[in-house]
Image 1 (cartoon, rainbow, N blue to C red):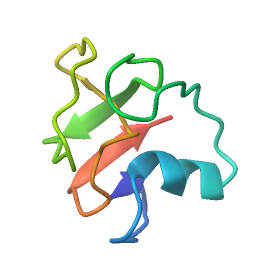
Image 2: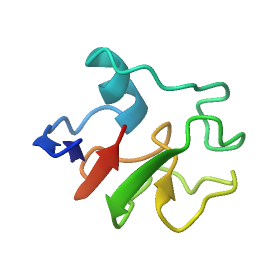
Image 3: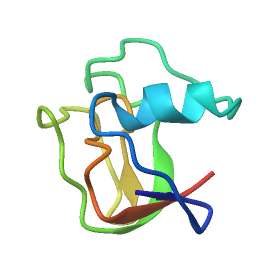
Length: 76
């Protein structure tokens, strides 16, 4: 996974946990893919631990349930 173009790999956490561990603040409420509050722009195909229910535009992902093994670039 890439965050703003920088390669970051960690197979045991969600993308939201990864962002937070790097000091990148993302608004997140439910952390289960329901509310959509953690929505961020991304380039690439998302792979989720569980499919989110929150509304997403074509260029958005929910990092709370996004797998860090995804080959995707998060634009935060």
